[in-house]
Amino acid sequence: MAKVVLIDAGGTNIGSVRYALQRLGVEAPLSSDANEIRAATHVILPGVGAAAPGMARLRESGLIDVVRGLTQPVLGVCLGMQLLFEHSEESDTPCLGVIPASLRRFSQDDDRRVPHMGWNSLRIERPSPLLAGIDDDAFAYFVHSYAAPVGSYTLASCDYGNAFSAVVQRDNFYGAQFHPERSASVGARLLQNFIEL
Image (tube, rainbow, N blue to C red; front, side, top):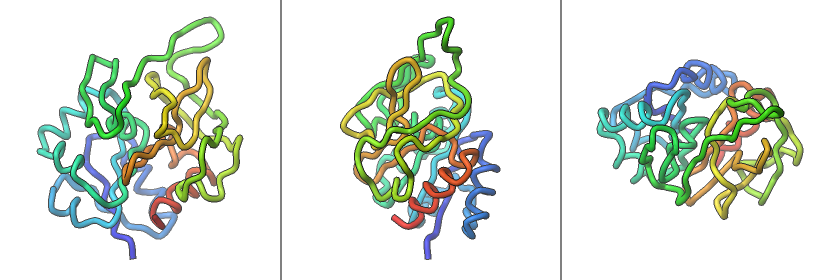
């Protein structure tokens, strides 16, 4: 039986992520306790907001090295995914450095507003158990102003002016830029797949 723990990084979507997990029959405590996080079978790093406060919250809780050292499956959601990268252009913020790339702000023009907000289609870049049962061109719900480039870690991309990483993996670390808890059946499937990793 999976023992899922949500890292308390101060994100405002924590309640909705917990509710999405409850719909799957999973009770996931919210924790900033290093021992509880290390003892979990699966760890989720949620987050909404800005990179600098998110990293500051992890630092204040003494969790930066804890997260970097986890060996079980870890899923970053939205800002939580962004924090897995080396650096964010947002407030020039050093992040966890698990994935070797930097996030940049979307360029704004007449056709595209920033933040990128709403439903957009996924392009599957390579197969993964995390994406089992999720089709190419499936739609997911996004809200973000900064994006990760496409690289060897990209499982699925999305296009908003340019291609960016929508789902990533490096070793046991996974990330979803979109909000699974707001992405209907696609989001529920991704969370279920993660719990089954």
